[in-house]
Length: 306
Ligand code: NAD
Image (cartoon, rainbow, N blue to C red):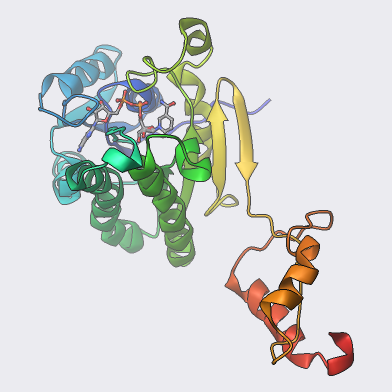
């Protein structure tokens, strides 16, 4: 059996750690030897107001249990201040969990610029600012672990959440690029699409479902991904909740390959549309190079191949 994973002397920054998933991460890392920066703006789930209480309560709980933690009350839009709290109090930063989030649900027809911009600011700019501020430290010490938080809404779309969906799928592209840029510095970045009972979900799911979706049940995956022993999973996407963990990947149909000349017409495409959508022999591309090699094959085709 695997021994208990520990994070002794590591500094873990958790954004939005005053409640829900962030609270569960912070309490866990605080109980496993880490020094935790508990960041939370302390506003409503719609991003209104602010308070120091949310973060303070969690810091107290970690300390009472014998752990080490410090509060930070800045918005993730000011990520440099959050990382500064880690450096000033603990001298380093090892793990960043970009978790803070809000909702501004409204149908696309009624979406205002304000609803759009606020979601982008908290989720997209917030994750960027925190990671950007931690990055020089990670590179210098040749060590860093990052978790970004996507959502099923981003992967599949969700009625009334186009702002949130766009911001959440952005976490996937962001993570995949950071994973590529960070790899040679031992900076490992992964993205999760969690599902858990929290103030965000308590109004949209029935109590018996929520009972089976404790935030604690997202923690083990995150704990594994940010541990120093994880050097394999980098730039990966995971779906996690209620005790279930699954890895996501892109799937491409076997596809239609036509010679790109005058014969390449909409009619020619329509004639073989079934090949465009045929997933019976799928490919699992891992980067744009796969597509480029397909195009090279197309260029080699003679008229008889059409
Ligand atoms: P939550 O509302 O309980 O927790 C989010 C926390 O972030 C709150 O404590 C809030 O005060 C804090 N926060 C909000 N804006 C902030 C800001 N600008 N700066 C700092 N802190 C801020 O919600 P949760 O369900 O625990 O969500 C955590 C993350 O998981 C979010 O990114 C959310 O989008 C994502 N998520 C959750 C679910 C789910 O099922 N709960 C599903 C998919 C994605």
